[in-house]
Structures are given as structure tokens and as C-alpha cells.
Image (cartoon, rainbow, N blue to C red):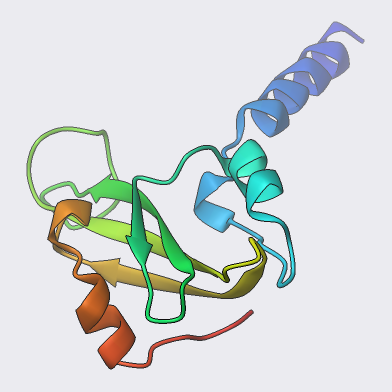
Length: 121
């Protein structure tokens, strides 16, 4: 009985501590304020060509020597990006996920818009 109780507690802790930031499930039409309340502030906010903005969420992922996900130590890394496009009315119009080697400071909004990479879930 103690083993079952212990396993139940461990499972509950595992589920409650798991991160949802990597699996952003943003709905088209969602309010910007609700998005920020749910996922926190973006690492960058960029203007777009249509008087809206692009909210950039980024997670840095570090790799072990064998190129597997591992402990967060200095070394090889990449960035998982979630771009959320918001119109001038504050509604989400589209989203896009991307894996890149450059940090958020190197993102150029004009280049993103010129590439027409808007993809919705």
C-alpha cells in the first residue's frame, strides 16, 4: 500500500512540474493579454508590416557531447523559437515554430516578413 501511495505522489509531482512552455498551444483569435498571462512576457517583440507585432518566445537547448539533450551546461546549443503574430486589434493571427542557432537578439523583423513564413496552427 505504501508503494502505491508513493508512486501516486511521484506521478502527481512529475505531472505538476512538467513545463508547458515548449508546447505552446496558442489559438488563432486569442487575445494578446491572455497569451502573455498564460506564457509570460516574450523575449522580444518586433513590429510587422501591418501595424501589428510579432511576439518571440525562445528556449535555449543545450546538448551533450553525444548531441543528446542533457544538463544545462555551456557548450553546443540551439534555440527553439515560437513566433506569435498579433494584429493591431490585439488578436493572434498566426503562429510559427522554428529551430535556429542564433540568439533572439539577432532576429530581424524585416527579414522575417520578407520571407513570408507566416504559418498557422
